[in-house]
Length: 170
Length: 402
Image 1: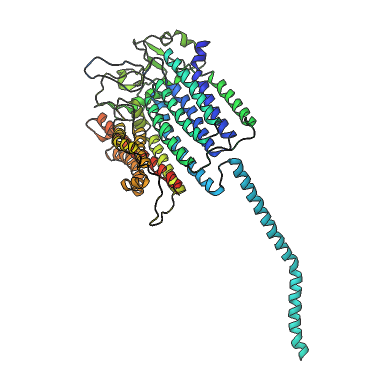
Image 2 (image 1 turned 90 degrees about the horizontal axis):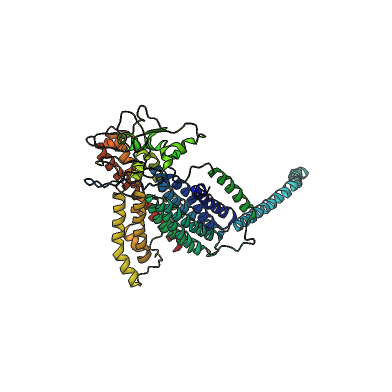
């Protein structure tokens, strides 16, 4: 039992790291914190991949030899494939972080804050203001529409008066 | 094995504690510095698990560049996160607990840590290696799996042939196989009629003939079998650089003096920086060039090169860096790296091979062609990575000087 617990200990830590990252992404409103937490989530996955690559008694997958001497490690070597995947994933993760930071800077410029809930409030206020402006516009529109018959009548009356005037003159 | 597990256990406890601190500490600066600590601990974990290339990348990227980027961004942002009303976000905690429990339940079926019989060591990878590695006058790049290739059969070190049952629920073989007795064994895929090192299982057993051979199997997989993947990873990094330029670059007005905070009055910093920068750049170039011989390669070397330039910019100010490396040059070079990579692939087509089949580059000695192609590709990756990292730093720093 102990052997098997030690045997999958690494996989438990990977779950733990991933969940710490996920908690940060959900629970923290600060956008920088969220970007960092996303990085923690990623390293959890890296740990999972690299743990799978290990072979009992193995060593780094770089074949060492001394050409003429007899010194040569006969293996086994660790599995290189997960290393390849994670190597590129780490560099891509820093690109993701950089793009996230650039977006956060733009958000700061636009909203003046980097707290997600405050940004939501500002958005909500903006929407309310927009709605109020729309309402006012509609009200003005409606008033105009209501006034239309009267305006038309007035115009017709004026036109009639204009027509009638020369008539009466004759 | 036990030493690995003991060191691993301690390191991972430290890593977990650091991760919790990163999330819980309120000062964003402290959080950024802790990510650096976290990355260095992670690099130690990777070294402990014999994953040198990943450790190298983690130390350079996580411990170096990403911390610089975070701090460069935090300069013009609030330094502390807002005080939350509740310490624990209950819905998030419940979600994470449930998801974590489901994942841990999933790990119960995983093979033990370091188990040589884990499926990952036996399916696909030996075949990939056999198609990647080039020998002088022998293997010619990527080819379909040889006739009679049986991924379920392997040869132990003393020559006995064993089989893995195709039924995954049958675990009795674990107890009966030689593997289980932890003797000197090397699982090898058995291919009838061939010497083992000519065909498969290279990653588990070194070939006798190292001439014209790529010693670092990580690089040979990275640039060889997974060449397409790596090419598009490079394109992803290139895209990140382009998007940073699009998001943050403003047209510079003529005569606008750039504010910067050079530390040129710090004599010790200035002298030490001047002395160390040539060695940093040289080391970066060494890491790129020797990618196929030892741990390292384009990704790591590119980041080290970028660190050299960033150090220069931090101490002498960005105007000085722009005199050495104008933004126009870095912008062009980000694209040139990707072009070198895909151009190497196109050159392979021109010499009669498949795309990115480097053995075609040298018809007389395919192994040397592979080495040449991998070095060219690593240089492409290195140029793109270093220039993109530099562009990202420049854009974030330019923002702060306004």
